[in-house]
Image 1 (tube, one colour):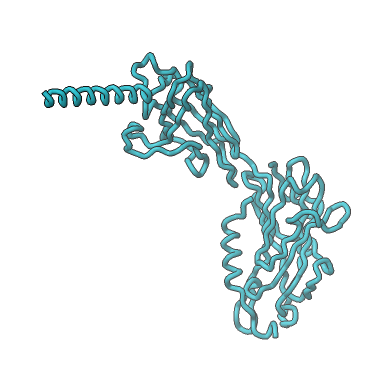
Image 2 (cartoon, one colour; image 1 turned 90 degrees about the vertical axis):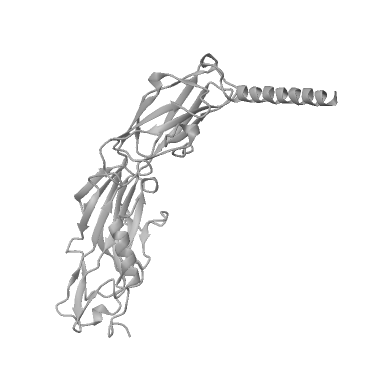
Length: 352
């Protein structure tokens, strides 16, 4: 008799577990297609400029008690590349993981108890002038399969137009090689030190309010960035000061050689503001020029930058060199700067 009671008790307990298991499944998965919310996306074509965000809004015809899971896949054949050109701001899925149908991509989780959800795709503002790039995505039901995704909402495209940065990067490079005492040296090798200062073109007063109004670090070459937010419309003249020549002017090199400054200019995303201008020979110093460590005591004109309603224009006096609308240092000059700072050395007889 006791044995029969144990069997009945075990059977009842098993039935209870089975019931609770079914209830749990019902809470997490829509049991029939008709129970599932019907989901659409607000648009299937998006346009954005580099640096901007694409907002993809998903709409359900009714709320559901748990999340709705979807997989977002980047299709092949795109001209825009993930990480380099855009990032998707939802978690990545794991390739081959069963809940996500074996598709590598991103997990889009439409929250429970709501009828609208928006996720974003951020685009990258780089320093390359480019044609419009495109990327295509595909949404599929995945995970708990709780939402019916409309066929017309499975694919969408994003067109990413070229963006132009609001900064002008200037690199001042005066390095060159010369012979002395039977050996060849470079100006950067001997720590030949130029500094550069920005002056208001109208008043000819040095700028003291802008934090980037000087490039005077002892580096060879020197760099600084002009940001539109810091420079109102107007002309800005850039002058050079020879801070230290490490004895070059007293070395007696004959004939003296000219030391013009090469200005490498770059506005990220602009095809017209990416190049090099060489200082006018009329203003260039030479190997006999004496240094003066007082910043404003002896200045030599290099170049003028005009700012006008979001447009940078470089001028030599009043002659335009280059112009471009709306920073990153050119990688070649970053390498040059690092190399020169590591290899600085003194020339015997120049500096006692």
